[in-house]
Length: 329
Image 1 (cartoon, helix red, strand yellow):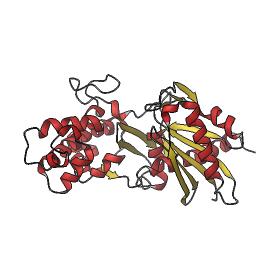
Image 2: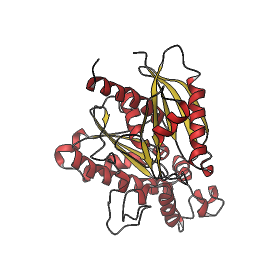
Image 3: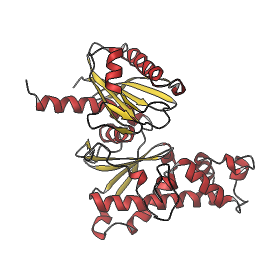
Image 4: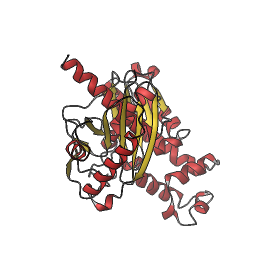
């Protein structure tokens, strides 16, 4: 099929856009700063300008529509984003209406949570392709999740399913950004993992991280942990293995609940896969029922941030396919 769609990844720092061909993937990619501090109208103008720029690169084939991945909750109708983090002043914004007011009605617009679209992108263009159904976990500033069932996003009853990051693994644990005690994000979110690392390294003066951080552990980042671990630093490896054990706990609970035994891990922190994911592969077996253990697979998505743009474009293709089935000519 020769269908084309534009996929948008809206973040607090960058807006990324891609022209995607259904059967082949990327045709054109572009990006620009979000400039979120200037408020929603300014950001929406920048999204519209970026869409025009990408659309101008399209070959003769018509563009089927626009898919947008945004952080935060999305309404059931896939039109609006609700209180997206890192986008000050947004509240509830109807992205479909706002963009069609700027671009006209030529392009249908579909909106979805960014982690869900990372899962959809993986399902059709990435490491998730061999699996009809899988659990997606994204490790970055926070911990996101998606449930892909029969190669489509499972959305629950309101569109807010798969908030894996806020599943509790320790009712007496630290509090996450939503006030939930002991959620996996309170262990694996970037600032939380950095805080744990600082605590563990206070008495581990042999670690090269002290030098990497300029002798000030307040400068510690997960990237430093990964780089030190790759250099053979055992304290850094211990911290990442600890994180991987926690990941295995929440994935085990998810598998027991959903009976979906394939997992794809994405996001920036997934680059530490040799340490975090390997540890999760070991610990997960302790937390799933015996009948599930031999069929579990955990793989790392290699598309990086591109998974979200690909998923946003594929959301257009899937949504139009579903509309065609509901309203045959």
